[in-house]
Structure formats: C-alpha cells, structure tokens
Amino acid sequence: MTIAYRVDFDGSYLVANVSGDLGMTDVSGLHEHLLKSLAEQPDALLLDLSGMLVADPLSLAVFTAASRQASRWPGTPIALCAPPPPTREFLDSHAYQRLSVFDSLDAARARLRGDPQAALPALSDDLLPVSGAARHARDLATDACLRWDLPGLVGPATLIANELVSNVVDHVGTMMTLRFSLRPRYLNIAVRDGSPALVQGPDGRSAAPQHGRGLLLVGAMAHSWGCVPSADGKVVWASLRRPDVA
Figure 1: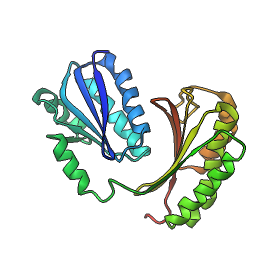
Figure 2: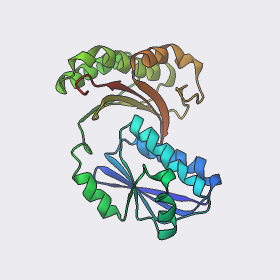
Figure 3: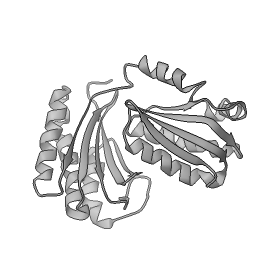
C-alpha cells in the first residue's frame, strides 16, 4: 500500500492524514482504515488530503463508499480537506459532487461548528461478558429512549441491545462497549467488542453462523444494521428510525 494513514483526535473530531499516491491497489486498505475511524464514532471525521495525489481517478470512489457507510452508521460527517490542485480537480468532477470538500481543516471545523446536528447526544457504558450484561443493556436502552423522548422505541431498542450484547457474551467473551447515539433521523445502537471476526451483515460479508438467529431478530426490527472493523475488534450496529421525525 502506497498510502499512509495517520489519525489524531482533535477534541470530539478525528483528524486523519492521508498521504501518498492513491491508486486502485490502495482502495481496499484505505477503505478499512476509514471504517476503523468511523468505528470510533467521532462527531466528525476530517481527512487531511494535503499530501495525497491521485494515480487513478476511479480510486476516489473509496471516499464515496466510506461516506455512504457513514450516513447509514454512525451518522458521522466526513470532510475532505485541503486537497492539492490536481486532486481537487478530480474531486470537483460530477462523479464526486456529493462529497464534502473544504479548502482547509479550519474551514471544515468552522462549518461543523455552525451545524447544530454535528454533535448530538450519546449514552454509553462498558460491560463485562457476564450473564447480567444483557439485562443492563435493556435498562440502558430504556434510559436512552426515555431521556430522548422516544418511548415508542423502547421495545425494539431493548430487543436489539439485548441481542447484540448477548452475542458478545455467548460467542465472543470480551469486554464490550454499548453505545446509543441520537441522530437527526435515527437512534443508533452499537456494540464494540474485542474480536476481529466480522458477523454476517446485509452486505454479505463473512463470518460466524452461530450469530445468525439473534441477528435475524435484529435485522427484523432495525431499519438497517451491519458490522465494521475497529482498531481492536469490531462494531456491530443497528439503526431505528425515529418516529418523531417526518
């Protein structure tokens, strides 16, 4: 891989420096880096492209794919910042017009500070892989829904939280983090664990058949759900459509 990817936290934002010559052979590795950054669930992901040139314009589709995932979960804005003129010319083409491109990191920060939806409420807790974890997950789901005036989502949110946490207890056995986050159109539920083995998601990616029945229930209740790699394992997430949003 000829692309270097380095990340730093900047307050509630995550800033990733992407440098090198981006070609098609770099797409898979860069896509995984971007997914791992999204798994951190920052308020925004700022990509510093000042040191990145484009060897193959088609490779820029990796940012479109990452933005599509971000819009489904975790609802994190992705900003492409400070691309050099040759890269900016490709990004300004019709194929990439839906990407958010800024002249600098400061310009992106200024836009995000003016966006009331850029930082929305979240509630999380770290759980041990023990039998009482699922009950605690249900209690936390109820707390989140009532705190954010979403009583109609208590039922599906508690079921999804129960199944996601139970899967970790039954099949993974690592510490986990359960997180609820309120987005403009969805209530997001995510469980991060310490196993890199991805579960079967709607995109057809790999993994363990023993997770299937619980995740069938999740799939039946959720608007959408999936699994992405994280720096030290994976995140299984699900979204519920907010009934208070038209």
